[in-house]
Image (cartoon, rainbow, N blue to C red; front, side, top):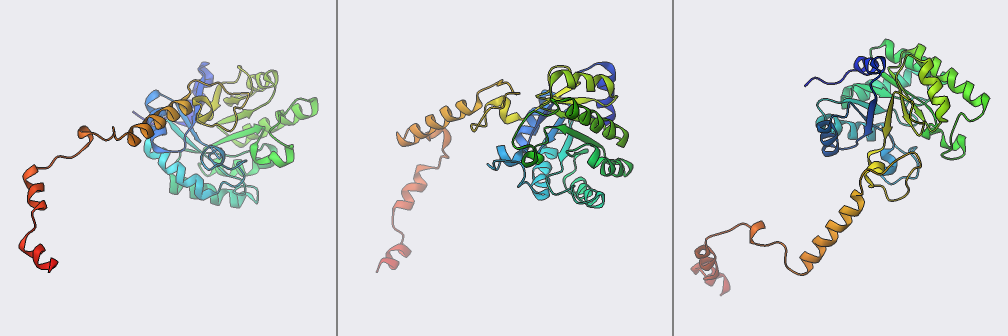
Length: 287
């Protein structure tokens, strides 16, 4: 089965098809998502929080993104893989953005790059798309700007802020992005943006009227115990299931009821008996 392309994502918007997207950071998760038919997988810098235990995404490095993207690319044969540009990889200059993006594309093998920001990164986005690198935009609550925002807060709630978001989206569209993540903005504003832009919008905490939706896999499966964002929904409680499974394992090991013969390798008892019988060499060593 051929891999999903950015052009197919654009066509999904044109056809009115919803676009589901999830994050993945390792081979087995990517393989499961791919088999389920997820068309796009994001290797997000959220890995800093859900995989590495940081309080924010800021410590994530390009090396981290490459490491996790390589695993996801090996696991997913059909989904379009999007790799995040982490904090520090694109803020310096368009040239540095290009250098880091090329490195990720060459070493990790995703089909697209995602970076946060609108007007301020439009020049970099244009340079990347002109070089043949598909780019996904990201506006609204951009976690790499958490210190400027004063926390994980909704964006675009005033007229001034909403107009700035409209300008950001227009700038990204003009720069050539194939999709834009709208994170934690008012649902009515996300609907307006989706209606005005030809670019597929992928919401997260942006209401039901975006062209698609992205969620962190750990959030929807109950695998991240620190907190549950308001914009997510639990579709499973794998964290609880894992705890129960581990508890059962601990109990059986302590009770010596695991492992059993079923999990063991057999050997001819005669061999063991011979091993118990001292040889001449063994007797000589004992002297």
